[in-house]
Length: 260
Image (tube, rainbow, N blue to C red; front, side):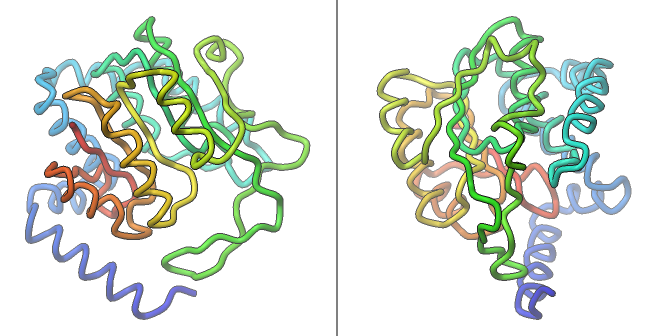
């Protein structure tokens, strides 16, 4: 059970967001988290000079439902069966940006990876480079709400990225290992990246390491994304350091974007 301190902290965060961004709060309360996320994506689109109608068209792509069904079926019987709306938002962002090189840390079942690869496939351009290592079943991780909790480990009989459709894998390059060991060399090898997404170890130290490592490799207009930014202040502190305004993709927190 979450501590009272956590609930007070979350309540303060929601109040702060409501005061600082009333339209987002109203959108969330009236229409729910998915519509609030789409509002944030439209705001990012405005900064990227992408028309609202184009964003709407990406969200309404009928083949996205086919991908979601595929993921749910492939993940059946595993801890990864739930598919949230964050994957759809990531898909739309990458359709807007049309990147050539995307790097992500943390793959596990490959849910977010599948939406990234779907965007690259529909753009007919780009490659996703993913870094991850297999966490043994029974491992624990630190949750800001619950303290130490079991990691959602990939079942022993499954491979990393097991939900990724076979038709997308020609655009996928997987590097096995910890980001602290693999990421610096990969960045030097690539020379430049267009989009980076963090979803690996959510400690303050590791998140700051990854954000700092990739920033100089992103061009102006490049995108830095992170899951679980509510775990600690790493994303907020990094945004302040580079003097950029973060945009949380969800009112309740967890996924945040930064345009260089």
